[in-house]
Length: 328
Image (spheres, rainbow, N blue to C red):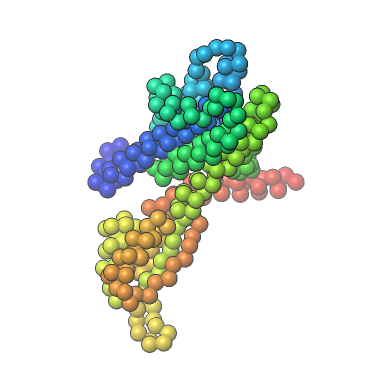
């Protein structure tokens, strides 16, 4: 693999992914520094540990900043844990984004690049309820957008997600369930430490906004479509799919039930994000084409997520269940 020469398309894809990861981490850090940390909101994730520690530092009368240092420390520790339990390949996959995020935290906070926002969230009169709610909503939106953009770049911000992945690998606990428990525990700890239930509830609101943004901007957009096209110009359409969309196609021989004419059905699978441009091309190439679209929640194989790892995991779980059943 090291000696393999990358094509121009592969190089551009790698560059695009790194740009998206950098931009996503910047959005994520901006949301945290501008909206979340100034009001000590605990929303889950490694930053929440930093926010709780920062709260006690501020309470002691000290004026130095520690939340970004806590984020750095946790990210590095969790990367090491990920390396030990999940291997080198996983660690390299998450390394870049895991370090870019705390780097942007430090840059935005220590160079005061978000003060123009955060300074307006604290009312000198002391009545900050409405501003805190707004900070929670907009902070959650920016954080969610940053996470989604990072996902689009095929990256991961690491953090406690690594713990969830480890639990999912070695136990029956699903990633979503463990992530919910970890974040919920942090919010509860924040409520207890700061003795401020309303602030904790605003933190929960912010986390919900973040989840909604990720859901609608990434999860829904990242679903897949299977298209079956019946067209006399199937060769032109197939060429477009191969060269422009960089996807494979399957040609199926069929016979029209009404006319008895031999036909070619072109089948192609692609991301929902590509649906609009694909339909536009079909309409221009052959307005009379007959096309059916079927939504798919997951596609594995060449050009998509690899199937091998998932099959190996399924076989491993199957063997484990067989051993447990034999022992009963």
